[in-house]
Length: 495
Image (cartoon, rainbow, N blue to C red):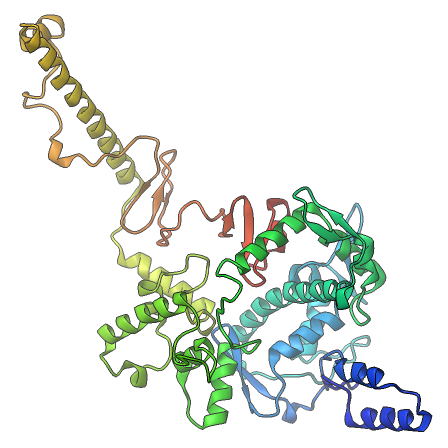
């Protein structure tokens, strides 16, 4: 039951294959080159004894690993576990469907054990079972941090499943179009060319899911809804131009980058130093200290200015980690559910606390007060129109030699004019319209139909559904893989 992590062939296998080639004398140079290019599938690794397992501690949306040098990274193990324990299909009342998200792992079982629990057990829980045979696993965690670590693990597995499927789809496409080959294609309604479902099925990977599971995935990827979402995702990725660079940290998280730099240089750069390292241009290029994008430069300047006002000019040395409150209040809050910079360094719990404090800091406005204010604003605007009309009629009456006030008292004695002590003062006019959604200074909204006032504190109205999912143009956006999902396929959103 022991397994090893082999990114590439081990030295013993290389020497064996080399000896065989020398003995036979038939291996061509091209074949040897092709073998060198091949990478072994990353496995979940060896089950280590308790005293040899690295300790992970939750930090923000990731973990620190102790010891750092020589230890497996949690993200690597998670990706391998998703591939190794992928449930293949989800049985429904009508017919099987593909496994598309982490929630689907919870709906399938192997030997009576839910597949999500099998994955978690393999990651770090002690779980002895006749079928699982799990006695020791990859990581351990201090019990004081276990609850938060569980939250982080759940969040990361939600991302990991959809990322894994996106990687498998990309690999299949590359395989079909390798070396200039063109598989059997078909056109969508917009004239875009796609490999047919049969072509995708022919590109099944060797070490991922079974034939039925792969067939269901290919059918899902060949639907018009999924293809439209792929096009939208591609447009988003190219929105900054073909040469746009958003960061250069690769697959290493901000927390892992901080550990890496600390181990490499002997100096802890803090979260801000690690972030700057991953957003500066490559060394050796012009302006290597320049950040990689205008957006990153702008957001960092906002944060730096706010921190200098709060903590003084020496804030980098005194506060090397991100200040979540400053990020939220001064650098754009969380318009897409994420902080503008350093989001992965801040835990979900801390973000919720900051939002709560920000809401409580604002003056509370009841729904009834909001409705009455809307009615007053509407009346003021209507009165402004009537005043304008009155001036026009007065001018016409004067031009025809008539007394406007006499005519008014004669025909409508109950009406008042602009000269009356009754009415609305023009200096208080605010121009509110009945039936139009109003926004207060806190970014909250009131719909005018009931007493529900939405004080979300975000100021991004009309872009989120009732569950907090961001959507654009009728499609829901998933930030982890830059894809859009149709409303009927909203379950694919990891959050």
